Length: 139
Ligand SMILES: [Zn+2]
Image (tube, rainbow, N blue to C red; front, side):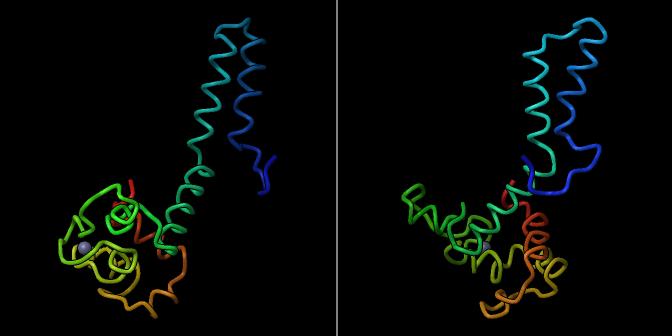
């Protein structure tokens, strides 16, 4: 069940459409394989990408994201230093506001080269996601 409005070309209609087309044409492809293909292909649609973006954004805002600072706290890494600039611990505040390696992406996405914590609190989520995508840090 979807909570958002569906369009007539929603990816959830791909499976039933292919089943009908497959039966109409005389079972060309195994239905089990075709339904798995539809499940996987629709999983990579915009809804899943939005979910991934929300997970990254929530992690950045809470500080619990795959940056070296948090990974060192979780004992996944031993070195909390930023792997891009090497100047200080790679925390959300460093990544979003201070890291000199991403200043051009920060300026084009957020309108400033460096941001203080009180300025970060005023940034809109879509602008933060634009910066995250531009930085290519969370692929
Ligand atoms: Zn850095």
